[in-house]
Amino acid sequence: MQEKGTISINTENIFPIIKKFLYSDNEIFLRELVSNAVDAVQKLKRLSSLGHFSGEIGEPLVTVSFDAEKKTITISDNGLGMTAEEIKKYINQIAFSGATEFLDKFKDAQDAKELIGKFGLGFYSAFMVADTVEINTLSYQDGAEAARWTCDGSTQFEISAGDRATRGTDIILHVNQDSEEFLVNSKLYDILKKYCMFLPIPIKFGTKTEYVPDGVDEKGEEKTKEIEVDDIINNTHPIWTKSPSELKDDDYLAFYSELYPMTEPPLFWIHLNVDYPFNLTGVLYFPKVKNELELTRNKIKLFSRQVFITDEVKDIVPEFLMLLHGVIDSPDIPLNVSRSFLQADSNVKKINSYISRKVADKLGDLFKSDRKSYEEKWNEIGLFVKYGMISEEKFYDKAKDFALLVNTKKENYTLSEYHDKVEPLQTDKDSRIVYLYATDTNKQDSYIQNASKKGYDVLLMNSPIDSHFISSMERKLEKTSLKRVDSDVIDKLIAKNDAIESVLSKEQSDDIKSLFEKAISNTNMKVEVESLHPEDFPVFVTMDEFMRRMKEMAANGGGMGFYGAFPDNYKVAVNGNHKLISKILNAGSETEKTQLAKQAFDLAMLSQGMLTGAELTDFVNRSVNMLN
Ligand code: ADP
Ligand code: MG
Image (cartoon, rainbow, N blue to C red):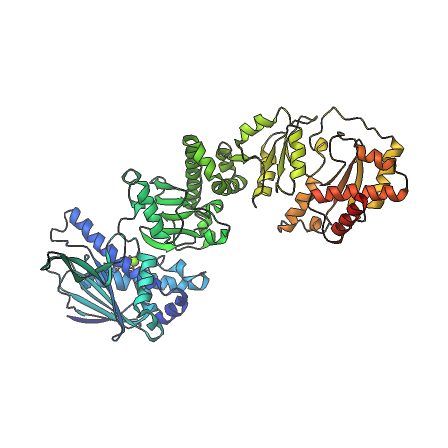
């Protein structure tokens, strides 16, 4: 048997185009050929279980090998094989019709990964790295004859009798000059590890040395001997293919370190398993989040029937869960389409909301079943939860029951618990509940203490996401405002009807105001005389909540450039009812008055950690003089 033919295609030679176009992604030839080999083995198993094949299946195996001298890479399987007729049908016609289509479309494509597979280019990806490709195969069918197909990258192919003696297929790549980098053990090994690590059929790549018992020596001690065994590189039954009931915590932890060697164990995990309305399995892990958020991102691996596809899962996993680790496997995700198409795909949308719902349910369960350990993990989980609550309505609705607020005493409350806790004391005269918060317990200590004196509680909001979380809580919670504890004097932050009378007359108050204005050189500080409790501090320096938020947003690139351009605007609240203020009014000379005002102001600045440099030195000198 000897036959030559021309693949029916309009273009003389498509391979140079394929090669050039796909160059950057050319390592995927191995993924395509190995997964074809795996398919061939699985098809044979299916034929056998359906009773269409009664011979021995043997140990299913795919072998990858290379010969650096002959410059070949061979992918062999003991699957169902092909007859010459089948080669013509499956390789020449079907695959080539894909290639023609590919040629029509390739001008518009974004990247190579979009195209391979989609147009059935799987097998032909071999020509990205090979000048000539050979198929040497023997079909499982009774009386089948071995067949060989050769193609040198032109549209000419050749089919002749093959020499494979056992059922299965060898794909032999004669590697081209530009691709000799692939004829290196470590290179092939790395590619196999990346794409084929969890394929369902054992993949053998080379051999390794093992030590096995070999009787006893003359002293009666056990001996071992070295043997060479097949090096199977993949785990054919990764845990996501198993049912959660078969698995123990240790299995999940072991799988985690298989995926991410040298990484700290995860906090907990979620086993995903759904078969309607789409197919999806997987395990998502909550990692211990370190400060290096970017290093933690993009670690979820996407598989399709155990073949690794990508670790870019942006559109499939909700943005706020991109910090999670683990695997997702779904044959229903269109793998080879462009980003925008993926976003619009209805399965992808459903998968996205399914994952988000599962995560919410898991967190809710953890919270309910073991609140103490949940609270211990909150530091790490909080970031995901808050991010999710900000970015997804539906997630907020679930998470509001297990999101925690932590106060400066490190006590934890759910949103409703906290509401109930502070409502009695922290409701202002307009019936708004005011949540006070601090971002830095050291710097804002005097303000926190002032609030505590009144019996108020102060939340700690010191994570990078908190400023956004605060705004989103304000939008959701009814009649509730959040105010940083140093954004005004406490009696104004939570204004009550029982206003304190001022001991100063209008003139005295004006005098004090201009005294302080003179004493303060900074023009961005606005002095206001207020009638506060005599026991409060004589002077406070505060920054308005709204102004500060706008500036923070501008600083974070929130498009509020207008506010960002403003200088910091502080308020200097002078407590007209404090003894010190009366003392200043009654001081002997103008100089003495100014000195005292300066001193009182500097003390306020000092308690805010805002007194630095020359001003601090001045303050120290002035204090020493006063003490003398
Ligand atoms: P796909 O895998 O999407 O069908 P490919 O281009 O990768 O497309 O392969 C084309 C066809 O060639 C396969 O569907 C299969 O029928 C046949 N084929 C490829 N490799 C093998 C193999 N190792 N054993 C048996 N048949 C194969
Ligand atoms: Mg294929």
